[in-house]
Image (cartoon, rainbow, N blue to C red; front, side):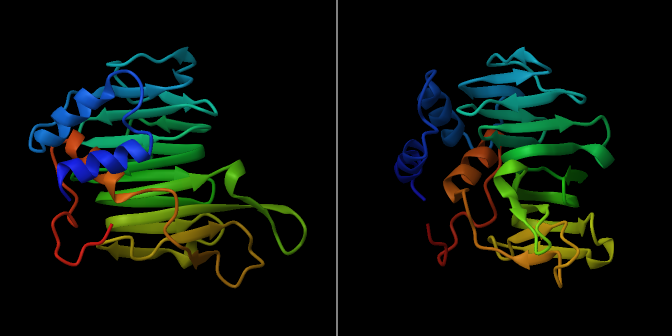
Amino acid sequence: MKRRQLLQQLAAAGLLANGGIMGFLQRALANGANPVPPGLHKLKGKVTVNGDAAREGQLVKPGDTVVTGKDGEAIFVIQQDAFLQRGDTTVSFGKTTADFMRVATGRILSVFGKGERQIKFATAVIGIRGTACYIETGEAQRKVGSGGTASENAYFCLCYGSAQVTPTAAPAQSELLSTNYHDHPLYISDDMQMPSVMVSAPVINHTDAELILLENLVGRWPPFYGKSDYTY
């Protein structure tokens, strides 16, 4: 994808608005091998870290909780990893790789460097290794189960890479996924009345332009970049 096309897609997604972000993105995309400093790099709307108003350049550290309001959004980097956190989202970062990230509610797109990390949300524990994923969980994904009771139905897309996906309601259904390009998105439920708590899902609410942006922030390109059979 040419840089102009990518910038057009990012602009259409609203990622070039506010706070002089255009210059920042142009530098990031022009220097894909040179990562940006860690910290918060784009803030929109209400964003807090540990309950206090966030500021650009602020570091997000182990033990921190990042919360975005309804119209909020945050792009930030932690070491080799980069995140696009959408509105109405609460994410906490642990102090060990076994408790690296907890998504309490909301939507977040993440890219990760080398090494193992564990992600937890209401319906699953995800063991990842150098990959990218998109998660939706919480109120936006709640549904009424077959018994008439509220149940959780989170969404997980392994955009590329490998991950061990273990549903909390049925650990025996744990599955090792390996994908190259959004090959097997899942809805993961806690409704034990379903034949399987993990079912195939479409690709929703995240784009390849966003993945390219996040990878560029940490000095990488997605593995699909430049493939002749790649479509946008």
